[in-house]
Image (cartoon, rainbow, N blue to C red; front, side, top):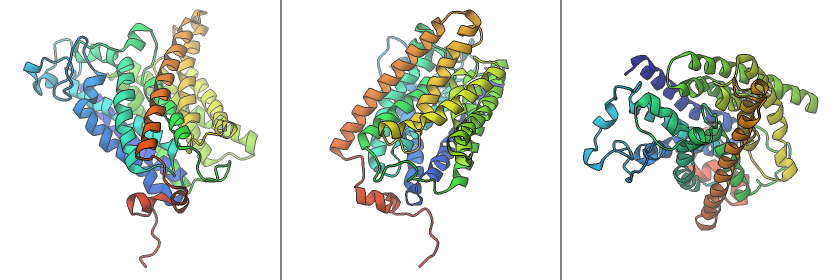
Length: 420
């Protein structure tokens, strides 16, 4: 076992876990003051619920071994003989393994948590907390865990020494996705679009009507997200090596250029470059570099970040054109940004992109893999959300939305100015 790599993975896991509270600040600042508790609680609800089911069975699904039955969780990953279940199976490291399986389990748990939390931004101000938790649990089980297995399963085999199956999008199709452009970004963005359609528009939905109530929260959240994203991308190498270093510097480059791209769009469109735009541009660059952080040079990462900032800055206007209320622009930033990052690999990826090889085959593979995940997530997310809405109800009443749902859902207020 490589103790340095193990420590690197565990530190990266802690960084990625911090990204979910950071997202709570980012989203919380963007909503109305009367909905800030509800918004932030959806992120913390994801931490609680997804963290629990990951241990019970999520890890077992994502890192399943072929030709096995059983549904055991940790300890007792799918593929371990039932007669030999025990924690020692996860603590023991085979001679060809680099890190213990439990370090991978911890790291990947944080990915599942934040992916679910990302979706909540599309339904801000109008969702019931209980219904959200039901959606989060079902969606993680039938959408996130399978998709994560399609991409991440095969990469983990070489460092854990486990005989892992799955990973067909990477191992079979040949798709490149270092840290989750499909699993995290496109997956959550497609689900966000589905839920926005199921829940419908907020009362009085119109451009400029819903303004952020706490811009410092937004900037704080964006800064902490950027900090945690170094663990997200560099940690996905599962080793403290040169590839992790490349992913690290690219995670610095792309969001920096993403800020510039978004601010240029704002300056041209609206005449002003805003702080919320800077925060959004940073996140757009981070989203785009997620799948491509190990496939690009730093200069190419700057180009990608600039493109993502411009494209996502324009894409957030699509909700007004097409009439869907994606409250906090999950679709415009995560779905569109994820697609940009995935496709850019096929164009400028080192040794595989069209610009290097003159061959568009990798671009086609990247597009196909992205579309597969997009459609899978959207269809199932819509079905899950629609079922919850028709049974227990997903959306609050209009009058409760107007009054603010913090008191209704949680019996609390975000800001109490007096004790009277």
